[in-house]
Image (cartoon, rainbow, N blue to C red; front, side, top):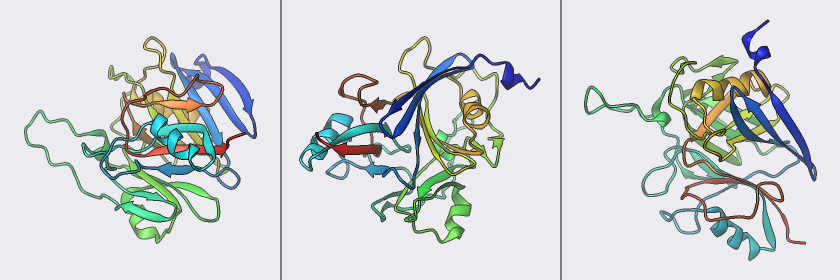
Length: 257
């Protein structure tokens, strides 16, 4: 029997309106799973109201309230720079905010570690105007001629066509909170974030990739960010609190009742 089938998996499914939220335990780590139908559910990508200022869930909720809306789901998107602008491609509402980044990381010393964004292959998660979603390796994305309504670039590309990123090691001791996004074989979007509990919420990148491939039916999955990761699901994860600082936030919204 394949090893992943012997792993202890606990799944609790909660029907949250038309959306489905789950908690899943995989390889000793618990995660929040939010499944999205990109053809029906309008996933949005938000930066701060002012370029270069940090973005947080409470700030976004306040901006939405002025529009008569509120957060239903929120999770930080791709890796960003110290000025709180995305490190790579960021498209919101069909507008390119930051361009595709195909640069390689240049080490300044022998012991210099390559940042996660530059662990090639990295990739782009995007949603087209027709409501279909995909994840593509960044250099390949540049050749596709896509004009998506939403896109976030990050790295590493956890799973590509069913293969886990070659740099990731099953026995790695580097455990952090993680969040990422996958696209299923049937075209659904799966947003994943660690449960924010120190004893049960930390994982290495290999097992995080394995979760997408083996448990969530995602042949393609993209790492978004690490220890700062945060998730909010209305009525399930508690009230909106002051979060870590982010650049982009992926969100599902709804009218204020």
